[in-house]
Length: 120
Image (tube, rainbow, N blue to C red):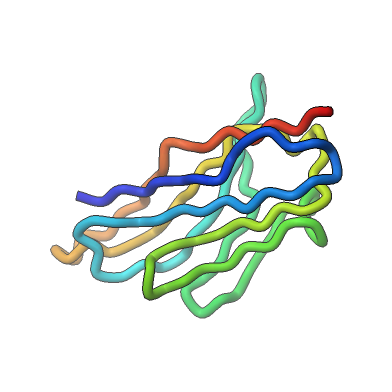
């Protein structure tokens, strides 16, 4: 079994910063791409940022220059540093990982989400 657990969400004022973490655990052999998605009330889930195992990154235009994704392969953990937060960044943030279990079964796994609220 594989679990992804996010942490680090909370309430922050506009212009503030938060750092999200997501740790993958369980019967994991290899983790490929890790991503952060977000979903605001009444909106579709959208991709925020992706990082490959080699460290190549890709960002949504709306967060470029403000957010930074990174990972620790030894810990199977991905981070999202969010700076200069805006009210429109408020959402539930979800972690996603494409990985191989020790059984070599390949899967696409999701965390349960962490809430980010941006408000004064």
